[in-house]
Image (cartoon, rainbow, N blue to C red; front, side, top):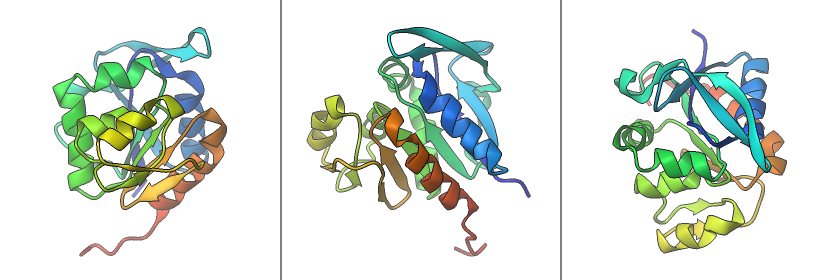
Length: 181
């Protein structure tokens, strides 16, 4: 059965932080599905202006649970996670993946969603430098490294970390886990 990763994003996602990991996952034979707040297309933020658009596969309201997905990818950018963290269903999806013990990979500002979902206390994580105080205030042990992994949470700092971030997510998705685990 093919492995599948949900990408949860909305308008204002950092262009490279969605498109590059998505391509890396697909190149590794992993299917991706883009879930967003609204149907249609969402638009990237690319450094200092709006970027490319991408077609949404499902809305958050069309996702009943995290079954059928092997992991969750949360791209960053400042706008995207700020909009997602105030949407109850988006936050519930993050909590569902965590409750199921499935990998959640968050880069840049995306750990804001982990904070909102109540998942960071006592965890060793990283993020974009401007939200590290938020992470510490929520109880995380914040480190400055390209990938931090604690349990099912995988975090990275910025677009420069995408190769290592993608590699870690791919290896977690491809791990063989006993069915009774």
